[in-house]
Amino acid sequence: MKLSADNCFFKTSSSINSLQLRYSLSKMSQKFPEVQGGGSLIVAWQVRNKNVLVVGGGEVASGRILHALNADANVTVVCPSSGLNEEVAYRVAENQVSHIDRNFEPHDLDNADMVLCAIDDPEASTQVWKLCKERRIPANIADVPPECDFYFGSMHRDGPLQIMVSTNGNGPKLANIVRQKIASALPQNTGAAIENVGLLRKKLRAIAPDANEGPKRMKWMSNVCVSWSLEDLVAMTDKDMDGLLTHYQSGDVPSLQDIRAALS
Image 1 (cartoon, rainbow, N blue to C red):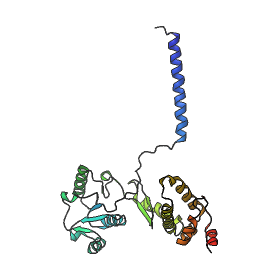
Image 2 (cartoon, helix red, strand yellow):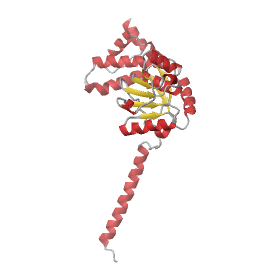
Image 3 (cartoon, rainbow, N blue to C red):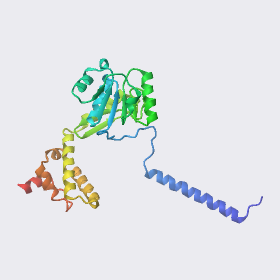
Image 4 (tube, one colour):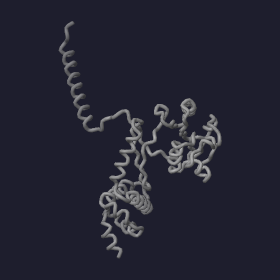
């Protein structure tokens, strides 16, 4: 078959367009972060006032219970009293958690928003997992990564500061080692500095509540965090905050020393 000049021109134009598209995509790929599959979606899951069911009462369960209580969840433990370790028994006695004194039954899931299973019975654990999947309840089955909607990483806590290290189920002990190294590198009183920044943000929102002020508030707060040392953020008093906030409208961020000199 003989090709016409028009056909040849069309094919040449298509080839050029294809090359231009590949070049453009190649340039864009250098602009945006590369996708790295195989990870987890790391989020700060809010379970405040949510119902968390813990199945089991041993050492692993005690850790799960503490994590849930630290997040202000309503925790229910289902486990025979004979299976409670000292810590879990203490939390039951102190009414920090509700206790169902028997083995797990399917209807225990009726009001559950999250399930944490920590028992030494693989068959029973899998049954809990299957029931949770049927009801679309997020669940973690201890030591069984394929039966987990989420993992518990190695945690560091300093007031409002929370740092989690996860190996995505590959090496829990290594996660602990990495977490310890990170924690040891943090300046002292980091948590206290963050608490003061939080108080300053609340005060700023009170004097500049307009939603249109959002970008300006964020920029000014960012400048405070960058300009002030952690030591100064820790030392900042309520009076210092009020003095600093008088400079918000101008966008200035004077030092703590300048603030105190002006107030004296």
